[in-house]
Length: 163
Image 1 (tube, rainbow, N blue to C red):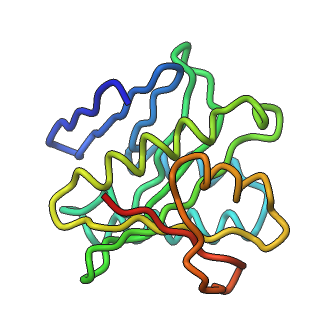
Image 2: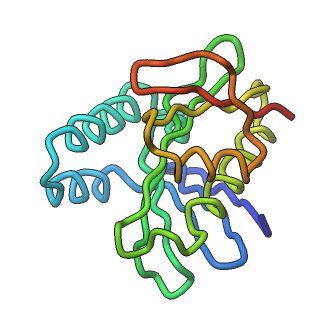
Image 3: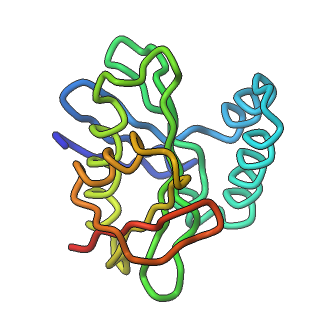
């Protein structure tokens, strides 16, 4: 990760990597993004993120949708954190558009987001869960230094990374 910046106000935060800019979406942008979705499961998940960011305005970064974009502004995916837990752990979720898979964007984004999260006060662990048959996502996590936790979550195996 080359840099991470935070600007107060609506808490606009951004991470920049070699090829990507990962930025926290505004409320309006999140609403527009949700309106464009067609998958009911994703719509529900994104609405939950939006509601979390509204319910926790001082901790938006842990609930908002983060847009993953190439430096030319083209959208390649998104990620989120699923709230900061009292034990100092955060869970990360991520996805890359189908046409951009296999190009290293997921690994680059997850590596940057996990490193950024672990630099934040009170965070000591980043977790992730994948579907049991999603070997590509499991490889992304392993490339980014996550290890299997030995715990099976609702969707499948869980992974973690610490400082």
